[in-house]
Length: 257
Image (cartoon, rainbow, N blue to C red; front, side):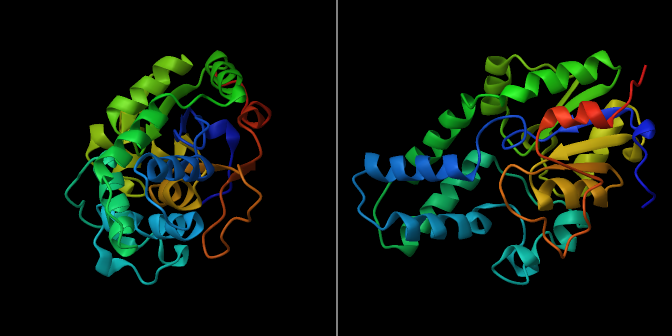
C-alpha cells in the first residue's frame, strides 16, 4: 500500500464499541460477573471469564477449522478476511452460545439467554466517550463524509446512537449487512455507500484484527485508537495512524471542503 496521504481521505468511518462508545472488555467482565451473581452461580470469576473469552469462537459465524491456534495470532484468517461469507446470526446469538459454552465447560447450570439479554441491555445504554462529539462534529465541519460501521445488532446500536446523539450519513451494522468484520465485503460495502474508493476511507477502530487488519485488507486506510496500554501485534501490518484519542484526527486530517 502507498504511503498515507491525509489529503486523499474523503470519508471517515468509526467502529462502535471501544471506539466511539465506552464499552469494552473490562465492562464485559463486570456484566459477566453480574450475570453469574444474578443466577446464583458460584465459580472462580477469573477462570470463568477466561473461558468466556475463549468461547467467543464457539458462538461466532466463522468456520472453526480455519483457526490455526487458540490465541489471537491465528486471527484473522484468510477465510475471515476474503472467503465466502458464512451464514449470519446475530451478535445476541453469539453471546448466548458463548455464555452457554462457558457454562458447559465449568459444569454449571444457568440461563445463557438471560446473560445475552444483559449484554444487549448494557450495550444499548453504553455512553459515548467524551471526545466523540468533538471529533465527529469537527470532522463534519471540515467537510468529511462520516460513517459508523460496527459488529452489532441494530437494536442496541441504534439505542446507543440515539442516547449519545451522534449522527452519521452512513450507518452500517453486521446485522444490516449480514456479515461481520474483518471480512472485506463489509468494508467494500461501506465505501460503496459513501460513493468513494476504499483508499479514500479512513477507518478508525480499537481492534487490531477486526478494524485495522480488516480495513487494510479491503484497501481502506486505518487509524488505531489505543484504548489500553498494549502494543500493536507485531505479526500484523501496522495502521496508518495510531492515536490515544479521537480528537487527534483533527490534527491529522486537513479541511476537505
